[in-house]
Length: 255
Length: 67
Image 1 (cartoon, rainbow over the protein chains, first blue to last red):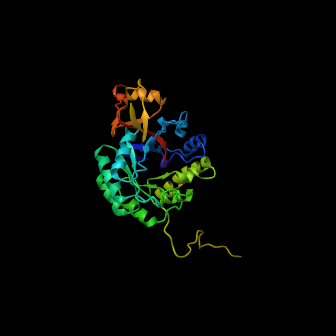
Image 2: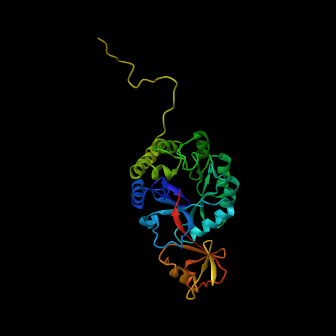
Image 3: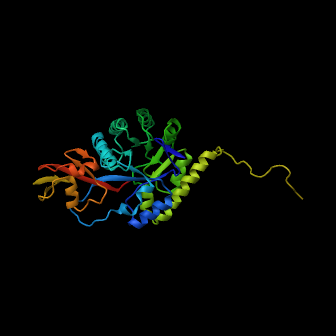
């Protein structure tokens, strides 16, 4: 079971919302993924447009734990404000701290992420910062009291998969709190790889929502999380330079 | 009476005196929204007795898709 801030979750897959072709596909993909945690953003309501429907309306939000993000924030102060607005909905006490420092790469600003996380922990949130794959930053975030750390596999929405498995594995080995690989995942193979490295969970959005068949891909990601996790728990064999026979080398019958 | 609503000037009708009235007037009283008035987040239970003053800066936000 995945445990974050005292809550337990059967699924080790966290899923983003939005970006789907339509609300029905989203609802079916969320269902197929088996996820327990959905992420959201906080934005201005277009109060001047009448009769608009929110694509999230098709989701039964009572069935999921909500993880609002602070996307859009460029400073700690902006992130803290967005987190507080989200919590004021009365629907969540977790927050994904996301403070972007570069518009082109969408890489997180480490200093502002640290500051925002510190403030939100003081304020009683369950804090999950989105961060780079820097081990020392991850350790600092854990020392602050963050409840999980979410290092990126590669830039957000890039689908490049895990660019630096070594850096991710350092974080996974050294941290005590859950490590959730967030951002950059492209395929089920990437997900299985992250889980085999020992990640506690994976957070996805584009890889499912923008795939050719989001419902089928959501199921594929669910299975990849489970396969990768089982593989990690089982423990893979060592790599060797030369072959090792699978069949007995003795008692070979010859005419 | 004018307020600043989600970044735009907005003229309130006379009947709108509270945040609850404002949500009703905008026909969004059934939705999950969060209101910030002059940089203060207002607790949902206080919408009916929180008055709107001329010049108030009101932000109404909600959840949208995000990763």
